[in-house]
Amino acid sequence: MLLKDKVAIITGATRGIGRAIALRFAEEGCNIAFSGRTRNDNMLQVEQDLLALGVRAKGYASNAANLQAAQEFVGQVLGDFGHIDILINNAGITADAALKRMTEEQWDSVINTNLRSVFCMTRAVQPALWRQGFGSIVNISSVVGIAGNYNQTNYAASKAGIIGFTKAAAKELGARNIRVNAVAPGLIATEMTQDIPEQMKTYWQTRIPLRRPGRPEEVANACLYYASELSSYNTGDIMHLCGGMEDA
Image (tube, rainbow, N blue to C red; front, side):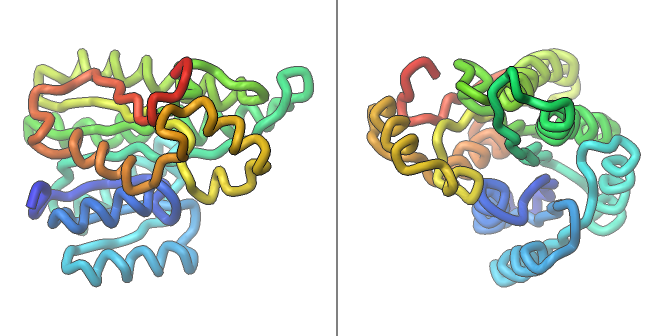
């Protein structure tokens, strides 16, 4: 098993890509601490699904975009699990609108959830990883942060910021064998994308050489690579996981 007896924190893991990452890591023997805004039915179900795979697992209600809450969350995980080896910064939302119609609330909510959460969680977990002298941080960016997209200036800015953060943090933390990498998915079939009009989905798929959206499990496999010793000499990487999408 690639992650046997490791402990991973995964934000935004009650559905979609985050849930797929949690399940994939658990299959590799990883104990999972995951978070969402509230301890709801989705969180309880993911918790049960993980426990059924024979690992330790616990869901926490926490706001990853609040530094104090992030620090308290990390403290709880250290108390419950004893150590932390991996952080997956996955929390993310969209609030799409044309730039001329975008409100401050739409801008702030996306920047806070998608980008501020990466800072808060990385800042919160850094002392524990620094003391032990190793760790892996994987940030979920997007090809939209590389190429941009109509009606997504807030989302594109947040995901581009994650790329810059990843590269800078990799330089700062590398001396303590803490690796920081990012995965930039393209169109992935999740709850977040299911409401995209079919005409728009068809258009996007014509720009993808593989002619299909990606699966959450494929993003999970990319994260597994960066979280495990398979990527022991990789840091500051940005993996484009988009089926060869044009302009990505």
